[in-house]
Length: 193
Image 1 (cartoon, rainbow, N blue to C red):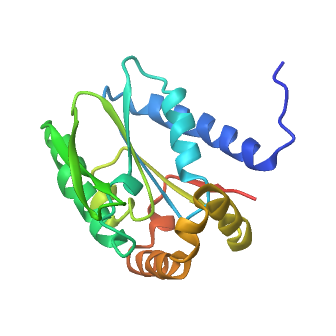
Image 2 (tube, rainbow, N blue to C red):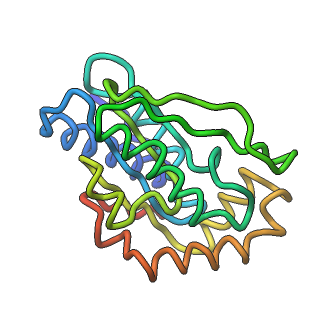
Image 3 (tube, helix red, strand yellow):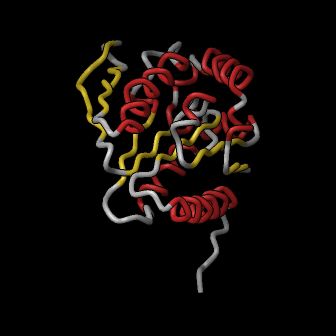
């Protein structure tokens, strides 16, 4: 018998991982691609980490967070495009993809990372899910929740580094949502408290 968490956020993420595992297994693919999009503080990174840890297929899965790719605080759209061009398209073609980590302190691209097309892949971050990226994915996810709790979680996680950029980032999220309607592209929707 499972002990139930008294944390509603934790319960939602646990239930979402179970749904995602079922969706991945039903794909019958050796190297499925999962895209997890949503607003800041909704729980995308937590969900992606839990899914990585519970990956239901043999072999390991690769997890790429767009936070490591965005080229600065004004780079949501560009970071999502880099992920599509450098990671998702090569993976779909069976080629090795490469991306460069963004060095937030130096404000420049840093070391390169490779993505193996033979392995499953999780890409998470705001901007991950667009009509063009959805065509390259097997399972698509939208995560959202109330603005006040999302903001509290994001600022608890990132502190003052994010506080001064919150409004600018939220504006980019809104532009992404208006332009691409990621919530409508999602196979799985996760609403967190």
